[in-house]
Length: 483
Image (cartoon, rainbow, N blue to C red; front, side, top):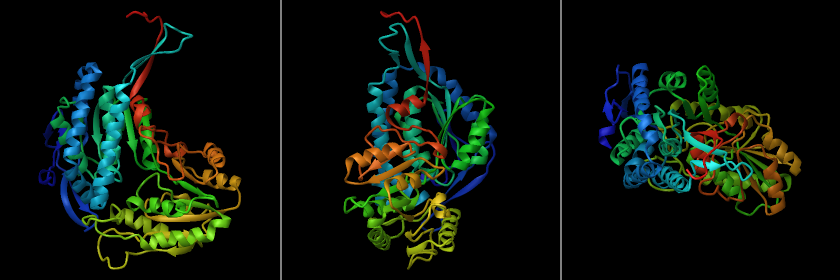
């Protein structure tokens, strides 16, 4: 890993190259507030070089037999798993995931998605019959071309693999711009792809910020598609920037998940929901940050959630154990503090946590696990994505009211339902306006698509749908049946 801590280079056309003009940036360890690495930020010339390399490499890579592309990705997975300890170290130091969680969850998410893509790709039909009613009509799935990939800091390898792996399998070539806050894991990933034998120009990496490399990719005439994960604000800006060139734009954005807890929910439902909210220090777009509780179970739920917050340990990402680490940066910490204060000022009842650093901590971007009760859905903490370990609890009196509150948000990523009444769970799930609904603690199945509706964007990442997202479909009529 030491070679990445002062690597002011970009991975372009199969080699590490110096930037056209030096503009250095320190990578800050959020546990210590000290620099852990130095990178360079790219400019227009660097973006142009990377896109040109991807454009040159596209015809040959698109024509490579699918079995050969699959073999390369299988090699990527093998090396990725071997280098898991290095990847975990990078993620802990760049964005603050605790040591054990970084290895077991953050790094493993990349392996999990890659395995699911491999499984989906083995049975993927690039040319499919339209149907029995049209025997000579076919649907062909073909690579888009050069794709720009812009990924966030909160789940680095989760998002990188959800974009890079399907792009490679589809036959696309790509330019990755990882978050400049957490770039080390992506730079290590570039080393892994190089060792796996990904041909020169097929994968390229340029570090930069959103206003620089991100915007340059969004308007570049030779980039056919942008896949972006991040804030809704940035997603809107990218959509506008890409409109002039009519790029394909795929957005996976923010969320304000509602977790509906009915009075007949299982005994662990509230504990499960609170822990999920605090998981990754609350820095997950699918976090269940609004807990809607049926009135008969409300007081007990508030008590249990407060206890979970009080028992949630907060400590350095460098330490092993089951604790949460810091949030990623000082601006993020200050934003969360402001939103906690807004909850207090607007009349929500603070039952755990609050502003300031946790007890016994004097440095690092640590946030106290916080629970608000008696929240109304018009409060700032119920409307805005906090992206920190902050839970808002809202009472409801009927199924219809619960659905109305859950849907009363500009977001629509993941909602949750807790009830032992299967018919009610199914009924509510169909009424919720979200791209994903998880019930009674059952996670999405392997290869299930991740994505939302409304201002959460409409990406569908993972599995078969994630592969199709990086392809264009072509309708062919008059197909020769024996060819």
